[in-house]
Amino acid sequence: MAKIKENKQASTEEKIKEAARKVFTQKGYAATRTRDIAEEAGLNLALLNYYFRSKEKLFEMIMKEKMQQLFGVMTHLLNDKATTLDQKVEQIVSNYIDMLMQNPDLPLFVLSEIRNNTGMFRQLQVGKLIRNSHFVKQLKERQPGLQPLHFIVSMLGMVVFPFVSKPVFQSLEVLSEDSFAEMMKQRKVLVPKWMKAMLKVK
Amino acid sequence: MAKIKENKQASTEEKIKEAARKVFTQKGYAATRTRDIAEEAGLNLALLNYYFRSKEKLFEMIMKEKMQQLFGVMTHLLNDKATTLDQKVEQIVSNYIDMLMQNPDLPLFVLSEIRNNTGMFRQLQVGKLIRNSHFVKQLKERQPGLQPLHFIVSMLGMVVFPFVSKPVFQSLEVLSEDSFAEMMKQRKVLVPKWMKAMLKVK
DNA sequence: TCTTAATTTAATCATTTGATTAAAATATTT
DNA sequence: AAATATTTTAATCAAATGATTAAATTAAGA
Image 1: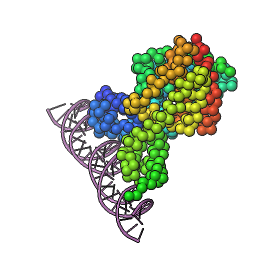
Image 2 (image 1 turned 45 degrees about the vertical axis):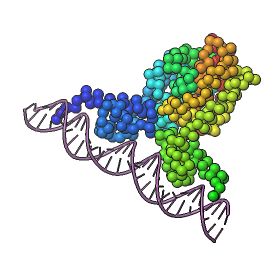
Image 3 (image 1 turned 30 degrees about the vertical axis):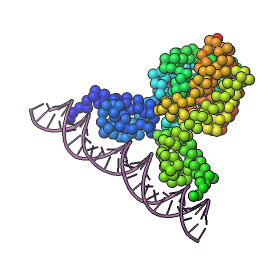
Image 4 (image 1 turned 90 degrees about the horizontal axis):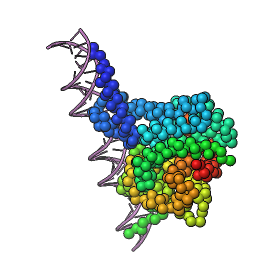
């Protein structure tokens, strides 16, 4: 019996997954053809169904990865007992921007796909994790009058929305690729300052 | 020759358009089947190709409508010489939230579709309109150190991102439908205050 | 009421697309 | 090198899907 060639198998399997990541995140599930993925990977179509049972199975695997990527940035920072609220904000903002600069299609991909499949997130325990987090506790102390969700949505919006809306502003010719990178670099400093100022309001 | 029955024609055509609006904005172009639209409209499939030449033509019509809807809220307010900067922010935020409460799927729809078709916005002269706006002029006076785009992206992010991310937060069970409506009502007041505070930073 | 034009439908086509299969090629073990 | 298992491919299938067509139905005007 021939041993499974771990190297080559991993390489081929990884080629498919990498191609799937690229095509799925760029075009979304419905607009993606399994043939697109095969071509992107430089492989024949049948291989996708040999390695993965179906388009859907392949998609689910990529989706899990991407959701992990999207939430992983934040989850452990939220419960760091050693940092102040302001430090947490700085770290979350900075980490998110770094990660999203490497994965600019990630937010729109996840946000688009979840709209058709709300159940996808159920398994994740991120909701509970957020509600019970040290971060939320600190927020309530600092500004008892403000619902934590308002603050979280605003913070994430300031970080994520630029990536989601980038194609629009580029089409409107008010934003180039270079100036986008520069803008996001500035936002690492600006957003934490702004969030501090917002917490002082009223 | 029978006169065209304006009433019935308009009614049927409008039924198709209304169904197309609903299905396209909910599921996106690629995931939408022309049969879905026909069924939603309570009509036979062939009628879609009788009234509109193709799925794509029908989509383009809806898309133009939706882009108009998305930008129309803002464009005239930007150049109102009679209002202060703070008043403009209040009005834009308030109008956007009202409009989006009626069309919650609108932002994700437009943002998703433009990623595959950047050319779609080229025709719109919104970019120039923004750059030359009274609003931008007022921003530069108030805070010469801050790029107007930073401010605009933040303001729109605070308003639009909640709608885009609503399915995520609902899945995470940190947000119900009712509390979302309440949250957006509060945001009409909060966001302008926050934007004022942000302009004072540094 | 009869004729004519507009409207609607059922049936069908051609293409796309996800998936399978059987054979060929490649690699591994002995 | 021979035998065996794994990997890859070309060819093909069945279902889904956008679109068309020709016939049936409905409405309007004379």
